[in-house]
Image 1 (cartoon, rainbow, N blue to C red):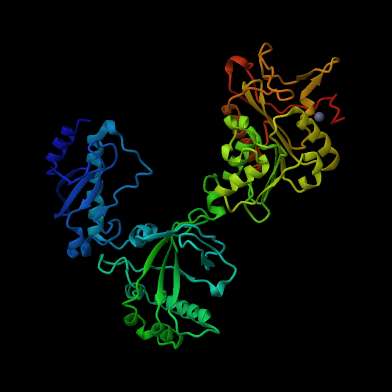
Image 2 (cartoon, helix red, strand yellow; image 1 turned 180 degrees about the vertical axis):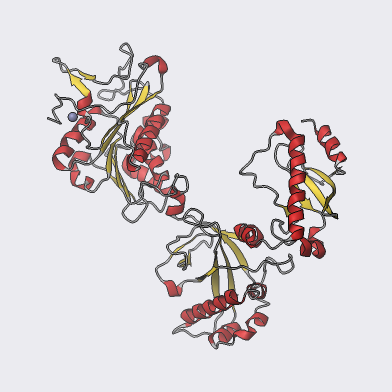
Length: 554
Ligand SMILES: [Zn+2]
């Protein structure tokens, strides 16, 4: 859209271009008439090419206490920016710029009219509280074990708080709030000192009483057995009872830290709470907005029912090579190793070599390290809450360690390992096995799930002829497809396939694993065609039957 058309359109609406010094932004200034009242506004595009919703500001907002009193602060931040839309739910269509601009103005007028009529929308205020609170720093990690009591300590870095077992010695005390006083304007808001916080809370009697008594309790607990002649730094965590909060949307949480001086400390210990407000004026407040970063939240939020189906499961991956590496990383993203009983066990006795890097999840940093160890370290770095354990031994030497697995995945891509696993586990512990492998030189990805429901095991899908050759009973490749190894040094020939084949195989396996734990294991033999020219067509996914001649199943 030519910018002159935008300007022409907005001129009809009595909005004229205005410059923002030292900025690439594009702005228009004028008035909206809402319910007979004139509201001065400024429309600001983030760049000179309008490709997104413009911001709408109320001009002179900061200094106009009249406007603030009339409109209230809900939906309008301290800079006067009107929150007229949630852009995550709708996208700006640049091919219909003028229509969208028209809608922006109409919507803003509608919202402002509503606010002139009744500005006290507590639900909206609580929902967006973080924006009003405007926390200067973010405490970004918290373990939510109990909504009513956050048991937290500050670690070395104040941005990183975590659960603590020692309730009473915690720096933070927490309070669940049902009703929040809505400030009428931005005077003393958001609070910058303890007095402003107390005065704001004081607008709701019960909230105030609860808070003061928790504060006094915490001071008492922290003072016990010690001289109380030193200032005391405390943090208060507020958990808002959001009307829309449930398991899925945790309630908004915000916090403040402050240092109580000796006088105030004595007043609290002596129960002289009447004077607390006046004594708090000089006490600086640090405001925080707390974001959840606990395992339930991280690993559940991308799932349809907001719970990781992998939580509390022992998931064993044999093979930390090309497929296993990407698979373990995806399984961690999906929550493997989360929950009290959760474990992601990675088994591999190989060492990572430079020639592996071109198709491995791990990079040069880990060369010459044991793959299972390195993978466990690398994945744990991104997911410190998960229980990830490596064993750097051949799987056949550590069969006892596989006990308790909810699923064992053969990610080695090797036929030999697949058959050996079926054979050994049938005798020792008939758990579910998933095999994931690459066909040919990256022609396709395949998985076979043996969930012990009477369908084929991995050995079942291979026929051997009299001359000792093995053929797939469910072929994927066209008969003339090249499946030869690429020769390297002695005993080091390998299948040349690019990284995409490993990633796709890992993804296919991850899909099956989620399906298995959500009780949709079929189809048990799945195909993902990578090279159409090398694969059979059609190639349906199936539930292969047991073979009458399978030496494992016999
Ligand atoms: Zn079999």
